[in-house]
Length: 360
Image (cartoon, rainbow, N blue to C red; front, side, top):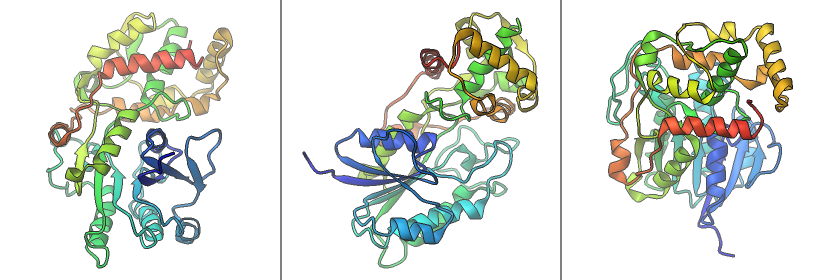
């Protein structure tokens, strides 16, 4: 059997991006993969795993300091956060620092470090921001996020001798990452599918729960496996060294165009825009009981309602009244041409949920 060409260390391997990335790499004979997560992986994995607390520098040094064969570090981890609150900058930056400081000195053949970022880099959570966002756009002065701090740490480390010139970095910037796995409650496909079925059970049409402006605004999504393939590409193509890339499905959507398709898929009449706070209206005991009735009626998998969907994430997605757009021209110019129809992606997700008996 041919020896692996690369040895990947994937931080955040229990999350949606890290897990899919680790699986994509592990299926490639050029790669040997070790996944990192705070807790031990449950169930079968196609890659080796290490349980490590990235917030603990000593734990990182003890468990990761001997991984001398590492050629690539993929950082897809982040500190647990809710959908609306700010994410801690120092803590997230230290997690990356603890990992790199533990592995980099021992990994003589380290070639590349990749950071998974997002369109928050451009200020997408502010009241408005420049669109379509370009990788060459300057940092936003009032946009406090850990992406900038993580970059500054890596940029500074890269210039320190004897590190200078020994390895390169890259960064991916996706938005609204979607995946077929039902292990992750913070999933846009599940928000839509469960919301639709609860509306249907009450005899209601498929209303749009967000704002009127959001219904009409442009939006973008990124399928997780497509993102994983893009990360593999940019971490091995020499032209991508020390570059960042916006990675999305490549199209722009409007919910006003997709909502009729969703209503048809679930066999419901199309409703109007009916703005509600999903984090409030969908988390009541009555909604939990309604979902239990649906589960029993259609013999679905029994999943605790509070683990099924992160409803505030729906409010986060369906609230903004402005376009959320990142240009993917740079990735195409550098050689990554994969794209995906986002409407078709959602239908495929719904089909998968049905096959897995998660929704009726």
